[in-house]
View (cartoon, rainbow, N blue to C red):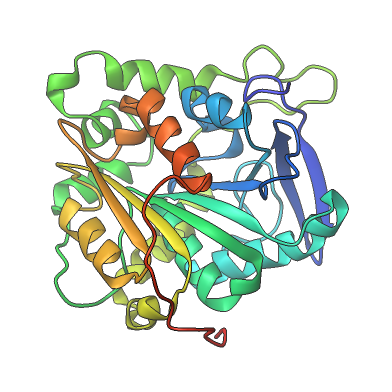
Length: 305
């Protein structure tokens, strides 16, 4: 079975973009593929194998780089909406080739923003949602992170401050271990047999438009106002002290989604899914398999945006 370390990098041309993506794990006729949308500066090379590999044991995973980032070509989107539109275009081209019509989605941080907009625009593509370390757009009962935290995660060259933002200091070496796993998992195949070199956390010219797209989410009231129209089963997870997307915002997101479960991880922050990878992946598998409570009603079908 392919893993984060060994999966082949594939390319799909759609309009003016060459999307770089990977299929990890075997196709499962009993469940849709799981689309993995990572955090703001990540690439398909920086997924943590402690999350990817256990999930790939039971599901086929799709990881993909947004246009202009990582190994994908094209222009970086100007907004989260643009990011979502590009992924919709990618899915509509890819899914027929792997003989399916929809996906489950795991969206972490920025990936959770994209997943929300994608579901609002193209609900026919989405089965279930896992939204981790993420929150809604502009709306009521939300908190902004401290400016110092925003500045640290968007430093031109990411450094130790990223670990501090993702992991509480009480976790010891867990943050540095995560960073090492995430940035070196492809070292054994990078540059060999047609595989590209490792694309690390985004830096350079692509960073400025990426930051602008990320920050516009906090000024867009439309997704928040439409959250209650999302008639999908959702799992929202958060650390109990998230410094990047505050825990309050994740809870508010769950409260606005009619069919959501909310799970909070003690002694953790933004990187709770990596800190508690074994438990987190088992929870995701249980949710995707129908093992968590679901709302006993539905508001019916809502037309997409």
